[in-house]
Image 1: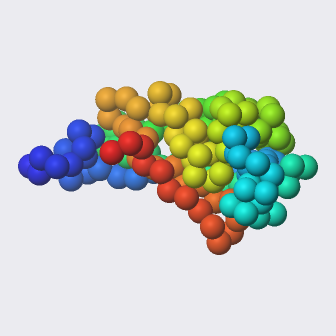
Image 2: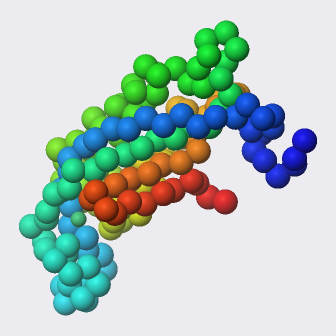
Length: 151
Ligand SMILES: [Zn+2]
């Protein structure tokens, strides 16, 4: 048995299950600690204080073993409920900087958003035979971030 693999992947039956979901949200990419000119230099048009929107796509990947009884890595309805409750409901059609903590304090870049989604999802997903493996967040069709937790 290889020792460098995760606990849930300790045998050869580990699989990756991914659920996809969409939400629309607006944001301003600007650090309140920096001035207007500095923010515009760093973030360009994304620093416009009136905000702009994205149709985000999030892909949540769970690693685990298929239960011999159910044939499932994770209950699909439960996974959908967790994603809806922790991510879609609080973020969909919101102005992230004003309505969704911690983005009143942290710049809601795609990177920071992926980290926050991970933090919101992990407690509900991690269990004996399954764990949150990756959060992939698409800001546009050709730009995405992967976050797999702190190493
Ligand atoms: Zn943006």
